[in-house]
Length: 274
Image 1 (cartoon, rainbow, N blue to C red):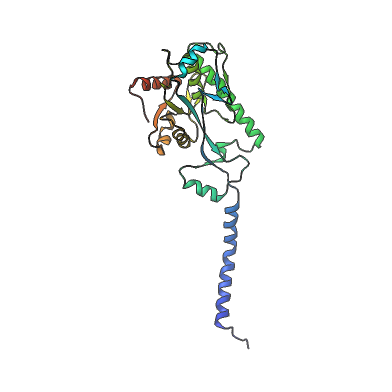
Image 2: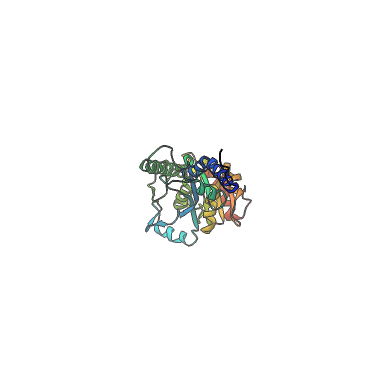
């Protein structure tokens, strides 16, 4: 005859079995929380004035009369290229990081492949970004000189900007080169004394291309004093989604279009908007 267990012990056994039945699921959940995920978490990065200096040297150097430089400096304004700051390529991004980024408008969760080349080492990624920046700078110089009616290579242009990679500064570099060489063509500057920020790739023919992280870049622009943001036309909708209050969006598709918009801003004309 088997002795019957007390009710309290039977209840304890049931609870134990219930807990044990959930252990595999809990283990999977814990593994998911701790496992690295193929994402990067980004936030607004630095801005850099392409008309200014970095470490005591001009970001853009071109042959120009010193007296003209001194006169232009009085109303120079600023042309800010914008960046995003993403988790390092070797960093482990976990479920908690991703969840936090989804609910924080100051951060964005992006596929890692959209930020860094897939399957490459940290050193290879750095080389890739540096190569993209160099190609972007070369295209920016060519586009600016063509816009001014000068042959590529006719002017010795030097661009200096450390710690920034990728091609998204192309438009701002072209505008900065034009400003340094000829200003607005009437003795003034392209900015009209404003702080103008923007982003966009550029090719040698002056076509402006889309980039990533536009909402974060508008935040960086507003934070650093910009009132106008030049955005690739194809990304107007994305830029509007989380636009900081007081920042004016100006869509551009070409370098010529960007210069036309800046001219209208200086003269109080009808400036396109997103």
